[in-house]
Image (cartoon, rainbow, N blue to C red; front, side, top):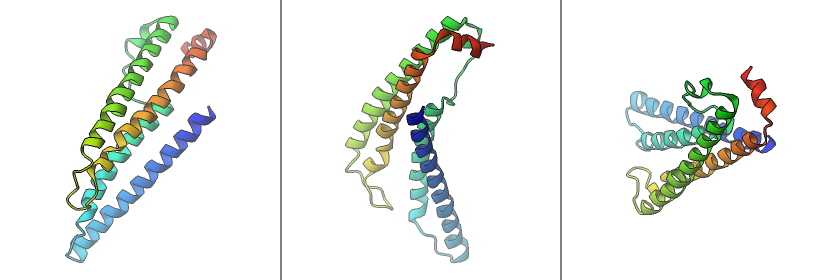
Length: 163
């Protein structure tokens, strides 16, 4: 539980920091455009990239908190044992998705776009896309913790949650 809490808290604070930075950058953009009449060009691109990063990191945070979106209509109608099996199956599928699509696919995307330079910031788009494999590792870690928690939980705990 301590590892989950520390990682979650770290992700939360990074997201808070990014959202604060985005807010300040948008306010700077508004001020320079409408008050000074000369907008700062880089802020729009930087805010866009920060939005991508905060979205991915918030997704990892949601998996660590077990607060991600889920359709529970069918699962709620199952018995405790069936619910546990379905939960384990879903956790394994999410783990595979995180590793294959976000981790490996994201790393390939970041690597192939490393020479593509952004127009205004002049940085490699590979750095921007690096958030995909980072998030893949984060979600995979969350899913491993989730699976371990589920497998270690006694059946009586699961029955108590049902009532």
